[in-house]
Image 1 (tube, rainbow, N blue to C red):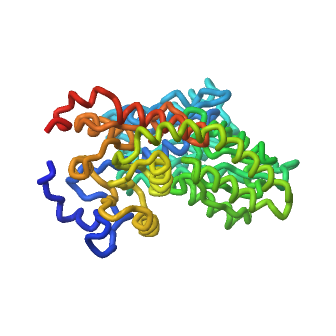
Image 2 (cartoon, rainbow, N blue to C red; image 1 turned 60 degrees about the vertical axis):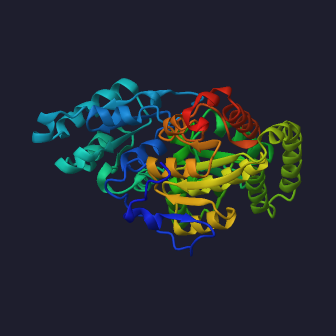
Length: 450
């Protein structure tokens, strides 16, 4: 595997620190034939909007598209569970020849009457882009008839990358932001953006902010509610995690409603604490007590977990890790969190990083670390073997690759069912990493015994 060469068209998207000048190519369409780890535009839009629990999510396309993205996030809801249903117009050959508009109209009419959603999102898939169904006109007509927002999501899979799907989702949500009452919203208020409540993480983060004395107006989109999104323009600050998915909406709200935004991460002690302090400093002029309250919160939480982390660090010290995630911003936090556990990151990459992201990644990494953009299984396998990694942190597509290579794996993507955000999440992360890296099963893996 290590002798396999890299495709010529991919060479500029791979960089090894210390061995060459940094001039990384990124933010481009995947190379045909390289079997990218990326998801499509439709998937990008679906994972962003899916956690809005009281909305109807209707996939206009073949049934396989609905199945592919069904329950793709482990997003929990404290109330309605409509988001867990996977509705599809199930387009067949006849619909593709004669058009699927009538089928879409009938599906919306039936589903809205039956489930009484607060809003409906209609996702356009590849085939709808090809046959040219006018979903904008149908959504507008159904919205007028049913009295709820019926929103087209222009997420035809072939239009670009997963990042274009994020933008399509933000454009759809922007249509309902600003349509609700902002009466009685506190001047110390925020929207939590880019948090998807995987395994209840949004509840953990929300609790921290409320202990700081802040009002959370809306979470985009974890445990999401349409009414909260409608009034989110009344918040004083947008706090953006997963900036790849939500930065477009945050910039729109800054331009239209004058709401500033800051970028944060909730993974690992260092970045979790920085996120809370950055938000506290923003409100310092309005409430001087918010910073002391935040300091007390951080002290209390770190004191609880520090002794436990020390024990894991002893066991994991010097082990090597690889990271491949959706957005590069998460990779920054992963590097810091793994260093907290005494581990060295020797391979790091993302599906949607920008030039600026990779510059930060390069500055953070040690010499010899391989950085990859929009990688494929061959490249990830090749460098994992060459670098002798003991742990791979990735998502569902990287899991089988790691197991086949005899490498411990930690799922840090949106399919997971384990909370990894916040201080309590750091303990879960340490336990998961320790259990996977030190599992006795790896002694039977052929790759480990070569």
